[in-house]
Length: 153
Image (cartoon, rainbow, N blue to C red; front, side, top):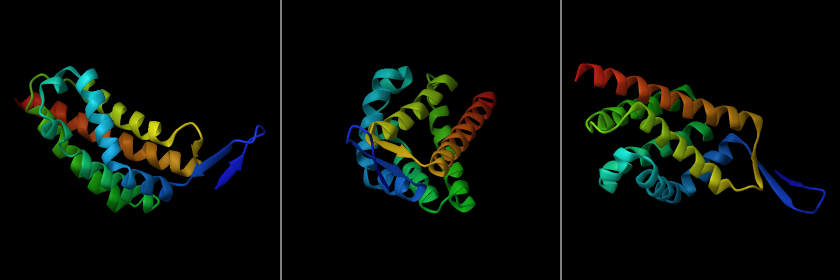
């Protein structure tokens, strides 16, 4: 839906399915933005190959988009959480990674997605909630799995 502001600018509001479409459509841009920022802002990432740094991100974005397009399917959420566990195990293999650095990586993904949306795009309430839900669930599982992995190594 488009809205018109008082100064004549057009704004677009996105529902969850449309946000999922945007994430699918712009996945390569999101990954590129993530790789650039992570290399600069996450100390452990600066020593990783691009392939290893990218890790499960294409699949995670695909599952995030599927979850949003489905308007919050538990099955799609479970698939995304399973990918988060695998991601944590890969990060655990690099002794330089810390919990804080993993949190920063997730923040970079969110920032990159919002950056692509731009200032003229707003999320509908349900879309914002679902986007937050999937981001928080995958982050929580990644951190929990990472911490468990570190305790056992």
